[in-house]
Figure (tube, rainbow, N blue to C red):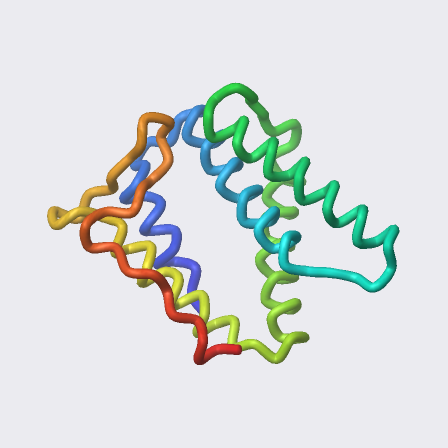
Length: 146
């Protein structure tokens, strides 16, 4: 797996990112975490309850960040970068523990993300700065990787 092509996608989408772009992207990141929390479960009621609450709170914050009704900032760049890198590493590890082909899945999702751009290779933004699915968009097909 190479993250360079993912980084290139983001550089094409936001050549000079602003604080607003950061908050929208944080919202998108938290939205993905909330979607993950929504599909894990537990037989223990207290764990199930905690997962539900965490998912709802995470989604609420994600929505607020994307809409601009909440704003966050970084207190420590080094610790923040370390946490981001650790999230990538641990996400790959979780996929591995589930015997999923995470590298292939990331490649498929990345191809799908590139299909969000218009015919001129430019991103399409909604009114809140989130990149939208354009006319060439295709859903990623992850069925072969589970």
